[in-house]
Length: 456
Ligand code: UD1
Ligand code: CA
Image (cartoon, rainbow, N blue to C red):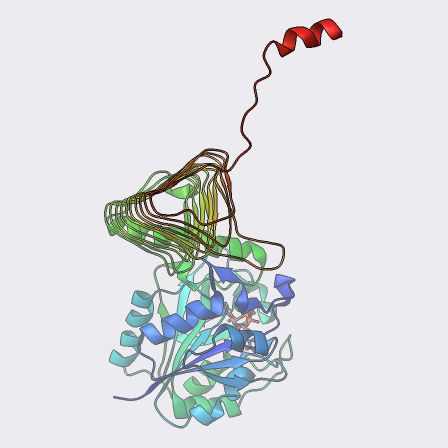
């Protein structure tokens, strides 16, 4: 089989975005547009992925770090044809697939169908086209009376008659490498934008006797190029619907899915229920039979089975089976929540492990702590972890019972089965099985109120 090399164009400035960020780094479903395109190139089995970078290239290269993508620099953005030419070293043999870094919605299935069409038909060059109700801004596919491909005209160069054409060029093309190389050398920039257009390559190859196919793909949304923020929002909506459809068909229930947001790399188990207002981000993985939401914002977190999370924010944490979180809990990075643990309302946890069966029901801060099994942290317990300079560890061992409104001044350890009286400020370790009381003794002054009123 011939080698398949994919060249992704991502050097352009993206003027219409009006952004400090290079256009291809704007995100759709939590992932940069260029990353979507790189993923697609890999999924369809490219032997090599080459990315043409220019404007903001350091940022683009950083975004794709460590992904076996080769970079080619286009110092001056003289057009899409010129951009492909920068990758000339790769045009010696095989097939060349060109993708645009600002078109993140193409599906694996549609692209695969296109590639098969090209190969089965023995074409020298093919492109994906589609029909747009409003084709403004796109290159138009011009066909002859027989419906055969003739050429592509860019919107800016098109006559009024040509602008009526609704079949547009997606920018995705597949070429025989050597023919592409020759055609690129023949390009001229005598057009409205003074650019070397990749789109002219098809006409050149045709005039040299090559067979060209413009393959009309049915889902016109997949072809969308994102040039401004309106298109970015439209792309986001479309991509979100694709992700949610996928997970629903995999057995995830969503109540009011239009209010739910799920990023590209999230994974969700069967029979999990997502309530309205759920946001699942980053590399979050959720097991089976969970109930998430309403209103949960969860990022980069690993959640096992049967977990419930309501009205809460969770970041970079791990939650084991059957734990219940919220309402109104805040799990900050490195919270490690054990099996059947209960984290209730207005509880904040950070960089702490809480082992199986423990309860932290309300108004508590657990920071830099290790809490054993079946511990009860009463209402308003504070792990006093910070002395203004350093963070210190608090350990609470299995079965300990920490009364309400206790301050645990770290570093400190509460032994197994120990009790702490409510309102204590604990500065020294509590031995296993002990009761610690660390508060002022109460004084009752009898009949005080009457005297006070008379004196007044
Ligand atoms: C391009 C096509 C148009 C098609 C549309 C589909 C050309 C001449 N026009 O127009 O037919 O309908 O896409 O979305 O190809 N880029 C570079 N270097 C450059 C110029 C562009 O790397 O010198 C990159 C951009 O970063 C972008 C892609 O190529 O990722 C497309 O460029 P853009 O300027 O957006 O082309 P369109 O005007 O949208
Ligand atoms: Ca574009």
